[in-house]
Image (cartoon, rainbow, N blue to C red; front, side, top):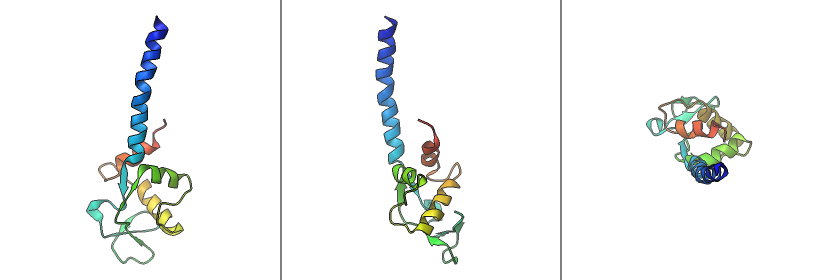
Length: 112
């Protein structure tokens, strides 16, 4: 009888984990966040004023959790050059609590 209870627990937990994983991969990270739109991203990931030499314009769009996850594994973010990709990933790595996209990035770091 104990085996039947354990089996039903596994069946009910797996769909919940699958839904969580799917939502993490569909969450979004804007670069930069809306409060700093119009600014540029320096190679080290800091947000700098528009027109700063060596910095890249913000994307004007958000990347999905799946896109960021793949980029952290070596694939480029869509529509970016190598240097832009590195700057945007550095920006994402620097996200802090309270910044748009932080929860999405933090959830990508959690082991499954």
